[in-house]
Length: 410
Image (cartoon, helix red, strand yellow):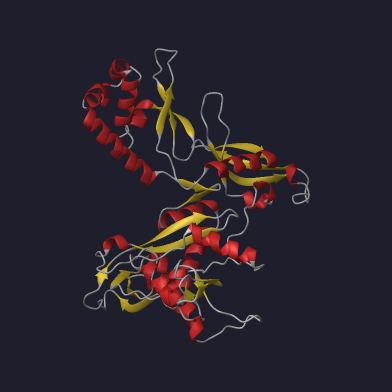
C-alpha cells in the first residue's frame, strides 16, 4: 500500500535539495521556476530543530541568477505546486504581449508553458522555434495585430499564414505535438525524464543517481522474476521462428514522499491484435460496498493489500522478443524473449487474472455467483477452512441458500 501523503512542512531541509518550485507571479505577469541548489544555515547545528532559520539558494529561470528563499516560503511554494501538478501538462499559450514604448523596441509575448512558468519572450525568436510562427499568427489574428506585426517581421509571413484557416489549425496542432514531446515534466517538484538518456542527464545535473538507481532496481526485479529468456548477443544469436520484435521503454514517476519510480513497459502496440478475448474482470463498486457492508454487519475485519509487480507473477502466451538497451547494462544488445506477462502487452491483464484465480481456487475460494469478482470460501467458527464439496462453486439453481438467506423454491 502507498504511504500516507507527506506534507512539505514535514520534510527535512536537506530533503528539498534538487527540487524545483514555481515562484509566485511577478508584477510583470511572469512566473519563473526556481531550482534548489544549496541550503544555508543561519546558526550551525540548528537545521533540524529550527528549519525555519534555514535559507535556500535557488537558481531561477534560464538566466541562472541566484536568489535566497526561506524554509517556510519554500514549503508553501511546494504545497501549492503539488496541488496543481497531476502528471499532465497544458500546451503553451500566448497569454499577452507588451506594447513598445520606444521606436527601437519590438513587442514581446507573455508565454505560458507546460511547466507552469510564464515568461516574456522575444516574439521573433519564439515564432522561429518548433513552428510557433503559426501560434503567433493565430494570436495576432485574434488580437487585430496582423498588419502591425507583419510589418515588423515580414519574414514570418503572419498574414499569409493566418489566411488559410484549415492549414493554420493543422499546423498549430502539429506545433502542440512537437512542444509536448520536448516539454519538461515535473512531479512534486522533481523533473521527470521521458527516457533513459534524460534520466542520466537529470541525475548528472542534480549530482545524484536517484533515477538511475530506480532503473537498476526495476531491471533487477525483472531479472529476479526471470521475465526474460536471454538468447545471447544479437550478433551471434537469432530469435526463434514466429516471434515478433517489439520495444521496451521506461515510464517514470515521483511519489508523494519523493521516491523515484521507474517501470519498464512493453510496446504492446507493435503486436498483432489477439484472436482471443483479453478481457479481465474487475470488481464493481456495488460489490465493494456489499463486502464492506457484510463485514460491518458481522463484525469482521477488512484488509487491503497490494501485490507488487503483479503481472510478473503470470506467464505470457504472446511470442515477442526485444533487443536489450543501455539500461540493461552488461547484457545490452542481447536478444531477450519475454516469458512473463510484462506490463504493456495486450494479454497481460488476462494472464494475471487467470493466475490470481488459480491461486484463489487452490486456497479453497470460489467466485460468488451474483458478483464473480468477489471470491468466498466456507470456514468453521474457529477460522479453519472447510475443504469439501460445499466450498466449491455450484450453479445458482442448485443452491439451497446464498449467504445464509434461503432461496425461493429451494
